[in-house]
Image (spheres, rainbow, N blue to C red):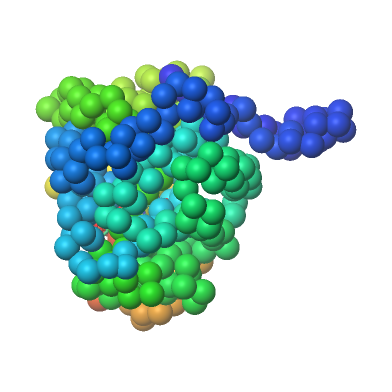
Length: 407
Ligand code: NAI
Ligand code: SF4
């Protein structure tokens, strides 16, 4: 299993003192290394007519690949939505990986950026995009530097026209990972989510049809085109197909990105992460970011895949798994999640802006007023514009349901 081995500030300082000016960059597969192994041959063949966009789309659908930003929308289907609209069309990569506990996109970009870049250019070819924007979070300086270098290498190699790939930096707002807020930000405006419909596939950047994909989704697009849809469709576990890059943190011995079958349970994930830390007993877990709330250890046999957690009032999202132990308080964790949403709410709509603030106050009380919290939660779910406000009540509801003794 892969383990994040990132440069620490101490290591970087020591390396810079020793004269290594690139010390902040992890070792990664460069353009020349990737190309020497047959990288970009698939893209070149497609551009030369080896298959039609429809055929590639069928392959991607056959693999079962679903959007790995967290929503799990069937990846190939987006292509036909965008292609059905008249040009010019754009492609935008959502690299604003802001979901607390999620670090899988960074993991791939700091090691193997080129399957992602090739996947992006395949998707851009499939929808005949005039331009590809990469919206990358500024908190990933190494990734930004890697992308700058590798995009230049692609331009020098003649794989893309200079300027075709436009690398944009996010500025630290969680909401700019919401796709329509990201598009507003790319257009140079404040990142406020738009009402949907219309979907960005129809009305995206500068009102043009825009294909939006997550970084890891595109990594798999390139691999499916090159290695075949079976790399995902042949993996089966607990009735689920495919692979998931679980970002695992919390009270485990070996936190990091663990690539496991999509039907894995929290028991499998903790085992892959080396087991619980000594002296800690498994108590609860966050399955997919704070908006997925907390589930108790008694729910350890549910496969953690798209759709499987819906009946339990949760979801897997971007597979940001945080493991809590008997030394942690579910109540404190839920309050922390709501404080995060309060901070990150863009403030555009009242149910979310005021709702998050009121929820935090109610959750800080010695005893939770569960009736009022439930009423507030329902108003937020019903009336918030975007997923932030709609999902923010999940930690409240799940804590009331599963950890009543703490509240
Ligand atoms: P969504 O289900 O509304 O949309 C998913 C995608 O499918 C979007 O690109 C949307 O435009 C497209 N889509 C859906 N229906 C469509 C239709 N009828 N026609 C055309 N396109 C359509 O979900 P949303 O709100 O975009 O994402 C929510 C997820 O994001 C959550 O699961 C959450 O876990 C995740 N998330 C991930 C973060 C990260 O750092 N990776 C950060 C925050 C949230
Ligand atoms: Fe902004 Fe929250 Fe409304 Fe989303 S739900 S538009 S984050 S105020």
